[in-house]
Length: 380
Image (cartoon, rainbow, N blue to C red; front, side):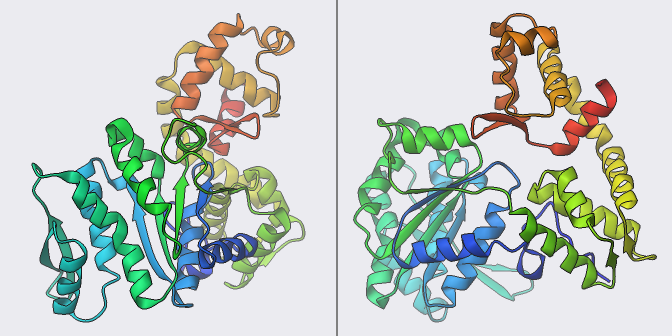
């Protein structure tokens, strides 16, 4: 029997933890043409969420494009990847699709690529790297809007990990051209997703950036506890497990309602208990120890890369347990013998850059709740 808890990859269908409120709101935004800036800490399930939303709005006739910019490292790669996703919207057989894509993107040269054993056919694109780039981008950024008008349908374009564009878009030339086109598209909703909050904020809240105040902010929080607890119990019981009273809430207490780590711990528990099929509070504690044991090597490697002051700050935060603690206060600094605030600030900047800590609603939280537990166990 297949483990009903999924972690480390996109959770779809029955494996997706219900976010019905968020699904309803995002679906409504798409249908009304509202641009959205969706951001959350890493591993909160935003990609699983948006793919679930896209499945639902496609069923209502919406034209949907999804592009993951984490895999894109250059302007050339962006053009090819975006064109490939646009080509998926072209209807009919391969000849019809080629004809339509040539009219939409006349400066690109499509190639038919056969993948697998002649089963899957895809289009890939080439273009003159020395040629004028602006007209090509004009075509690219108008294509979805043209298709939406022709078919009299609403469309949505999702850019996942949008902050990655800042790495290769020197001078923000591509972003400026995107904004110049996108702001006029009434039948297309654009959703920009990201997990690096400080970079997303700079792109969308900096007055000097092209996408300043371009859309509705949609911070994705943790799944509400009652909703998540019901999901946990249903997943266990659907595979013949009995869950003792209070266990789902105990699991969420350990994982701090974090979607990824909740699925991870439940996955471990299901594997450990697949013969006896009963989950108790004692089992949760044993499951935590198993996770820490599995991850110990990775945690040691992470710890070894950090300078002394960063380690001391992490130990102090793990001891406190409250992410809202005032880390620059004299009380906190003296209690943990951290020295001057300036050295703590440098350590904090390093930990934020390495995504070991993240700033959420004014508090500094560990991105990995089990790394925090490992630090507590080893150093406190």
